Image 1: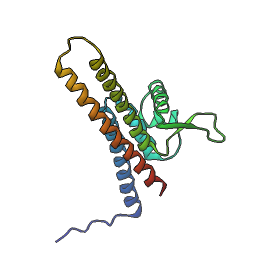
Image 2 (image 1 turned 135 degrees about the vertical axis):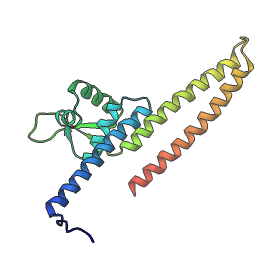
Image 3 (image 1 turned 45 degrees about the vertical axis):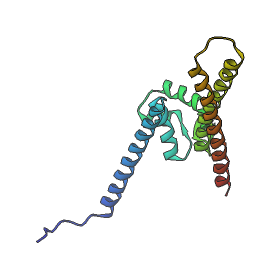
Length: 175
């Protein structure tokens, strides 16, 4: 026989929904920070991006620092880096003198483009040393020449696939 427990009131149900929302928000922001950290970037940078993605609305530096419980200096520096990489933008909010920030509309495509740019640098490095190996009379190991040729082929193919992916991504965003 089940004991007679009081039925949850609507306010209890709303509180449970609110607790769940807070838990999901907190986990998402923390997981996003860990994701950035896995790429060798500051965890705080990922947490800031996660917060902006979660809210989907402009936030001021004060809002960000208050929600993440961090000081304004590091967040200000991170916002500059995120703006340089075109992942967030500063916007004007009527009636406020503060700077507000929001995630770029295509933040995921832009992040991928940033990553692709690094791969283009690797291809340029491979081109440089493949040409030097062929042009120089130095006594270089054959394995170095082989690796540079392989590196050039690898990054040429990777860049081709990245370009195709970005084109397809752009098409799906415009549908």
